[in-house]
Length: 407
Picture (tube, rainbow, N blue to C red):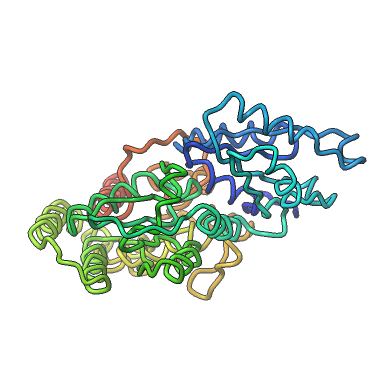
């Protein structure tokens, strides 16, 4: 890994850990240094990611030199004896990756000793993969390993794919999507992969009638589920009032579902009424301050592009500039935020800047403009979402309050 003035990009290992942290009735065992998982647990707690039990084996010089993995066996046995878990994910770290420790072979060798448990090795422990690729591969491995062939559920059900702890507001966003889909189509959530879920729910994912992919890293998982179980899917994140209406209409057409038009119209009308005055305030301010009519967003590519569309269409920002947080998603319309770009964004005092906590602190902006992780703040599942009708009202309020303080 190179040197960075700002927060370094996520590694594949961290992407995997953020996927696994929300899965109850499981444990994650990192074969590596003891400090890694302690810091990881602290950060995940702040993000509101609870579920999996996290452990680190520690690894010493002798074990590195001699290739001794007996400590891993002892840790697995201790967890199974003391914790109520049957599924253990084996996560490598950088040292075992460099020395060539084969966790897949170790898991296969140990499996006969623990016949009532599942040992699942992961292969994303090094720095050769970015965090978002680690998330994509981990989501796919979870369904390949855990999902079971089952008949569709008697009542209408769906899965959410891609609700992971690395996404800012991942819990409130998943809750808003569940609320909208449940009330519009009378469907029940089967599995939110992987926030607030359970191993048994991942095992039952094949019984869902449709899948909602809310980030591009989840599409490979949805394609696998479609090939194996025939489950159709839609990949999109609903931002803004009109954007949410379009999203619900898309689900209605793609899945051929009867929609509760009354609920949709009531939610649309309620949200539109709440933001109308704020739109008037914004229009007046942006006409009088042309230099401020710029909305700059830095974060996950799917988040920044969605919020940018809402800002342009509903609030009239003349310029919407997006930057993504992963080099693998770099594009002309959404370039990757290098150190140099972050420093330039922090210096620019004009317009509205939304990003992670670090970028907002550097630019002396307020924390309510945050749309990306990481940060050093505590979060919970009951915060306002960014997606859906309620997310549209929340974003409008953030912009309107920022305008009131500047005007």
